[in-house]
Image (cartoon, rainbow, N blue to C red; front, side, top):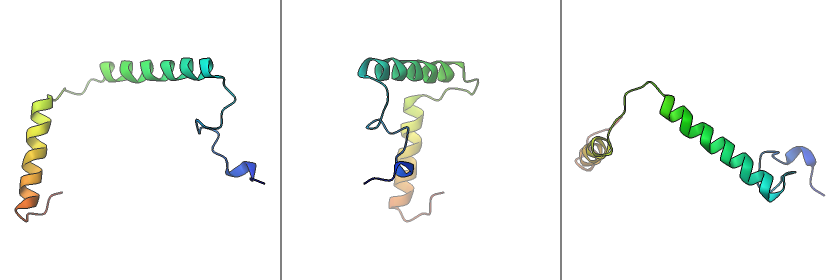
Length: 68
């Protein structure tokens, strides 16, 4: 028998919600995450800038430099 205290109540496999309620709950969560991102006052960074920084870090690592 499984000890109920070991079950994560937030695990999607174990849920008291039906499929429609799960979908609605996820939709609310997702929309809140998107809105929080849109409302974030920090400056945006472009995809190209992020990729350039990652490529520079990877190149430095390949050349034997320690990267923080």
